[in-house]
Length: 195
Image (cartoon, rainbow, N blue to C red; front, side, top):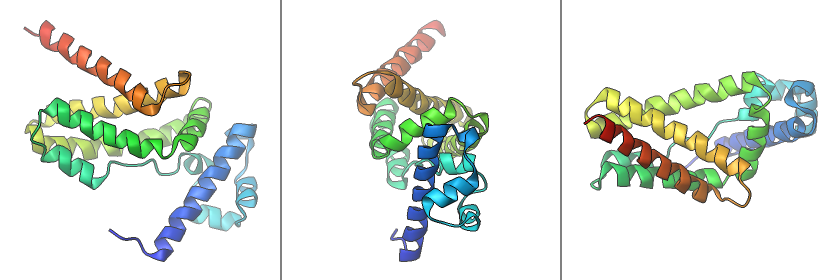
């Protein structure tokens, strides 16, 4: 899908506002930054700020990258094992996230100190879980299993980012490999204990 010039400009302005918000939040703490200061630093009016975001917390979180349609389709229609297809799906999403590493680190700093921002992010994660549940339900034909898998996947993404943020010299892809190994081990432990 090709975006119009107007929509591309709108998205760029939103990203610019988010980046300025995060820079100010990292420097001063989000609680000590006003929307007026954000707007001035972004070179826009306060009114324009509110055309894009409802508050400074939503500006800091922005719109987290969702799952791409092509990746969801590959997961839904995959012919490999579910484990292989899930790993491929998550690996592709990690590549998307890796394009935003600087933003991810700044968001992490905000999340550690701002409960309202954590709540906004959780809202996005709930949407992603629901979307992924529908995608997986088409594949596994069991809504509860699909919901459990979707929850595990979104949790794995969060744990990957956390590990990457707190480990020296670990790429996002390498952090994901570590988290994936833990998920497989946990699945094996659950399967073994249920026999």
